[in-house]
Length: 424
Image (tube, rainbow, N blue to C red; front, side):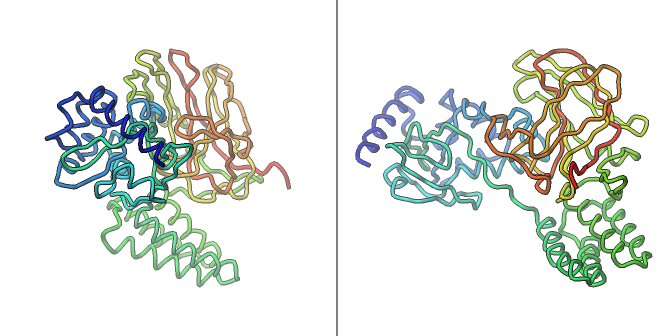
């Protein structure tokens, strides 16, 4: 520990003299201090986007783990782009508060602690490995930079908290947890009653963040389900409404035919509208992308540009929990443009989390039926390749990327997406 504290003292001196200037060590709050360091420019910009500058300029005191520009550059560009825009800024604010700890904690305080509780209400583990202080999976590179209202420790990675669950998701997930055992025990009527009560609460009470149009569609779905005489069918009708509310996807019933579960057949505009595009603009890229309704298909088109470190365009959608639980693979029918594409899955419906990719070649202007085993998809975490796999029951989102490091127009037309079983 003594060796580490000696290094901390030297690092602090270098930081104050080299990064901030000799006069910056006094009479400055944390945002002002950070704005004087060129290598913290990305942090300063994201604090402004999340409306946290005034908060961190207040009396405090605060301990801030400050990621460098290089740390932000490690993140997947499309994710950062989404965080900087509405409605992603709420998630961005939570991520940044995950780097803030109430109180003034020097390096000597941190090395004696197992974890800290952040201003986001999350926990970050602290470890000392070979005289290096690790905050989560980030290393402290410069410690103990003092501000009037706290202290700053520079780290080499952006810390990503566990995803926060919305109150609506928590409420409906609890209803499902109560209903599933009843259904499995041979009481679909009791399961239906649990689901119906939960859905009626969403329709007839406020505070869930559900717009009037969605409430109306849920209400109509409730009315249709009540006309079903078979209690098993009624329970599944309610469950589809619950899944649609949790994921924010359309309310088209999921069908299962010919041994395949149809996830999307794009027979209505609601299925297409549930997909959103994420582009490379956060890095200054100029790629474009748009999702449109075709002839009972979804069309994703635009143009990739390699200027300003750009080069990708993507679209993604959340899917109901466990919708691929009975499947081994994803089957798609697509007509491409001759370029290399990526189909991906995610284990989280919202921002962040892991992505699992498989690349596929398309033939310009020709329809192709392609099958992708889910557990063979490559794991990526914020753009970085990692070991690990995803199981079918864990899939919470689907995505398509054009990311082949080529500039030019692209077009992918998707006729359907299905979950299929490769073995009996």
